[in-house]
Length: 312
Image (cartoon, rainbow, N blue to C red):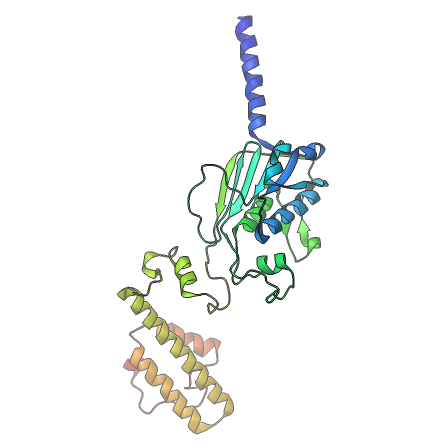
């Protein structure tokens, strides 16, 4: 019976040791065992992401963690590998997707990256710095690896950013943190997050659109349903344009111009009222009570002759 108890205790101890070895631990007293690893030919996104990770880890643990090239990684027991995928990770990443994988003594942080407008002496960018100009060219550059670093810092260390600048970084002081094995991935829910889409080429829009619903995949031969959707959007946009025009005419106070523009708007509504998914009654109620009736009728002192309520 004693032998059984001893063997059980030994197995439990080995299991505890094994679990500890499989967990990534950052201890401020063992920081010399850890390095941030980047590829030997790292691009601007990877270098910037590594610098951001170092800055935040240094703040949280009050240390000076090393950044090393991939060729030197074996000099450290535990590595945070930036822009480097683990062996066996073969799937294609979505645009801007961010991934981090905690696997024993290695943490891999990588993502979909693309520098569409590389820095040159002739085109140095507004920031006049290769790394910053390439990474922060937000309309053109995809920075999945950088997003992976920020996701890791937020999810695993509780870091928050409440305003621009280093004094906007809020974090709990730590001495030791143990990270359990896991895989995390993120990709933006809103692919287009710029104010205008004009900067995107057709090929870029086609790349992003394949992650939308199949009916909205961008091709040069669009489906009939998509074509109808575009037609409805054009009608709604034109309605907004005509509404704005009549409102501006009313502000000028030219009676003839008011009547002409109001007639345009009302006729357009009659022609297209059944072509779009608009609850006209709700729209009119909103305009009447919330907008002072800015539709070229009561507010502008004009009503069409003998209006037919069925038209509306």
